[in-house]
Length: 414
Image 1 (cartoon, helix red, strand yellow):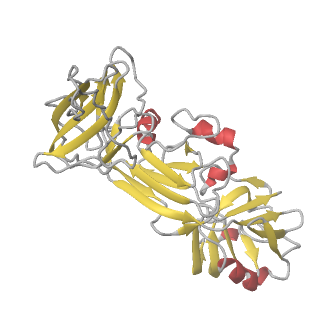
Image 2: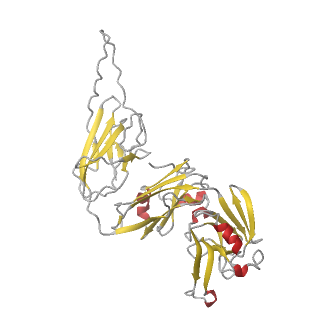
Image 3: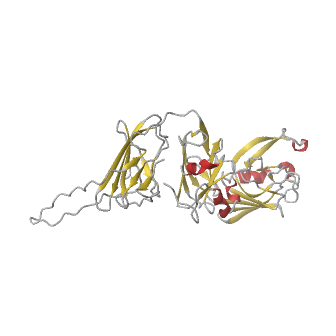
């Protein structure tokens, strides 16, 4: 992975200038203008081209072979120099789009490079004395490796999600702890309107959640890129693909269940719109207390627990209006058989039972990513049993980041 580093310093923080003209960037600016001096005839004299400064050492180094397709472009910068342009082209001159990281540490291609392909990188920088330095490097990427991790992203283009929808990245096998910082640096999230956030890894490294300190603002646009194609890991594996999605956050729809009175209170945009009775898990199979998130919706399904070690928990039942809350099998769903005790007694195997009419009413209004908070049961929600990102306080959540998190959360890396 490349970086822009100050000559003589460990790592340099690159300051952007108004003349930034990075290929594929959204930033706009114009090249610096050199005003003509006074002329006796009154004629305008032509601009004097800037002098050439010392050449830059670009990374990957010139002639480098077998570079990962996740490689980023960097250079060693003289003190006070600022990058004015980065270009990356194929052997036939086709330009590769990319963006500079917001911290100025490197330039990131907008898509994975091709396997076994030669590229030429050129970095141009302005010196404090007005001179311009340039560096060029031609390098070749590695052949496609045989050992890869698989990855997933629980976010899809043009979908609308609830305010508690975390960005969920998944990895098989899990990412080793010593590799998580490098992987996290390649996981990009942008929000509009801007909201700071952070990543949190589950203990076995199979999932990472991204969220803000508070629920997303209604109407937020989420743009995500999990840019892992070709990233090398310490276990000899490489990332398999880049994944990206752009989605929207809808209205704030929240469900709150209290075991004390066995009622669910439903809020939309902060207003209580309905209260309905529930039956939670009996003491032997309690529901999980915590903040859970709707992960999946099925209008009709079958619950089959015939492999449960306890014969009392084995059954096969047709279910309507099911909404998954945990990987362990807790749902909100219609339970006509318990309607006579809903609001008074817990009889379920851990699910939130509601009447058929109330289950249909909820199902028609909820979104994937809507939160439900359950309190007062005999069991606490286990970390990672579902999308448990919001079951932690912000101070607890950021402890799961593989990179330092500024107070209040980090902004976009690109």
